[in-house]
Amino acid sequence: MAIALENTRKWIKSRKGQQILICVGFAAIPLFLLFLFTYLPFGEMVKFSFYKMKYSTPVDKRVFVGWKNYIDVFNRKDCFGALKLSVYYCVGAIVQLILSLYLATILSFKVRGGNLFKGLMFFPYLISGIAIGFIFKFFYTRGFVFDTMLQWIGLNVENLPYWLKDQRINNWSLVATSVWRYFGQNMVLFVGAIMSVDAELYEAAQLDGANKFQQFKNIILPSIKTIVTLNIILSITGSLSAFEQPYVITDGANGTGTYFVVMNEIAHTSQKVGLASAMAVILLLIIFACTILQKLFFKYIFRDAESEEESYEAKRARIKAQKAAAKAEKKALRQAKVGN
Image (cartoon, rainbow, N blue to C red; front, side):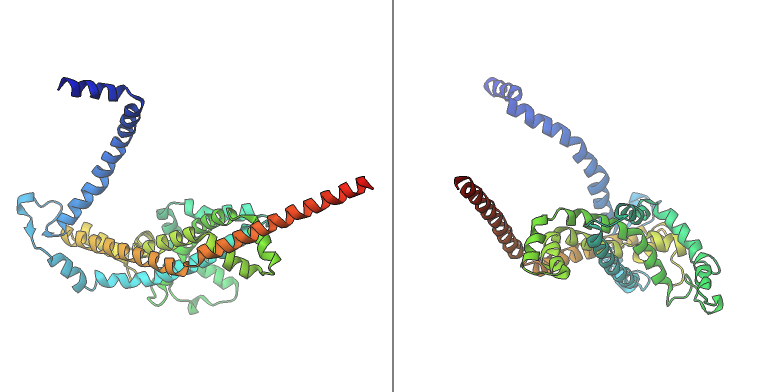
């Protein structure tokens, strides 16, 4: 025992032992907080999903119902049926990504006023989602800002739809709000990724006679594949969990109640905590499945990206060799002149 204690003291005083103790000491508190505020509540939520209960129900009064809450989620139209609205937001996410990638490609090169434009496009992302909700609630209200702007171009307000009441258009109105807020964030991420691409690859492509679209397809897109995949995963998962716009602008009325809005109503208005917890677990599994499918899909799409990068690396090496040969030729010419 004494020998073991002595060895422990020596290890603690050693440089390696002190490094390990410092790392453990700094990691212990964040890991404890992560467990306390993330994994422990998640475990409790999964447990609640098997009970029929309210927030105020005592522990001994909770009724164990097994998988009934999960079955109810799929049977109730107002629960699982609300996921259909995610299609609107997924379409908006695709438009958002295409627009942000297009603008990012343009702004990655020298454009007059480019920095100002990037700042203006990124600014909506910095505004609180609640504030944006109130702004667009009045923006879309009948006879207010949007209708007034449309009247300026000659449209009659009587012929315009109710942007937040007409179920043919109200979800698209909310999706447009979401696109306006988030596409600036995606654009800035794309700009940073595109600017990190080696400029000599463009030079190699120009030597091969590639146009701008071919440069985008064969150089930019494979080089930023990680950011593209990340943005699409974030956009699709965000579409499945859309909450702020429909909750603040319409409060889920007139067919705009997304899955999160319905779950919030069931949890906090109807006090059906077990059912709401089951909805949350199901949404987590759907997002997890979508993430895996997207990663597999983009792994297949970009399966030739590595070979593309290798071919351009070879072209870059060829350019360097050409430059070195040109310098050697000039040096030889100068030496020949000196000799004459």
